[in-house]
Length: 128
Ligand code: MN
Image (cartoon, rainbow, N blue to C red):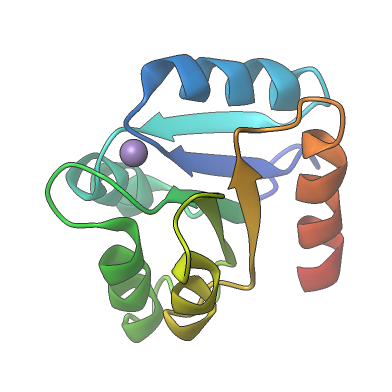
């Protein structure tokens, strides 16, 4: 929720170096960040606050990101939170599968730090 007018973004990503990079790039834009390394950790975050946007890695330990997205979309509490997949370019078909799972779009890994914040802002505005 936008407590202070600053968009809240939940990053579900198990590569901590990437999570740190995303946090740096988005906090610099004024966003509030929550980080989770798995679906289990993300559920704990979502139990106390609903973000404005979720950035979802597909390959996660335990439940994969697309199965988790489908779960979130099936739950009335979280169904309205837009999810954007973080997809590796090398994984053919991931983008189509992401959209089928209920993601509103995808951002390619490796992350382009020059365009990433704008991509995220675009997804936030698209859903606003
Ligand atoms: Mn991963």
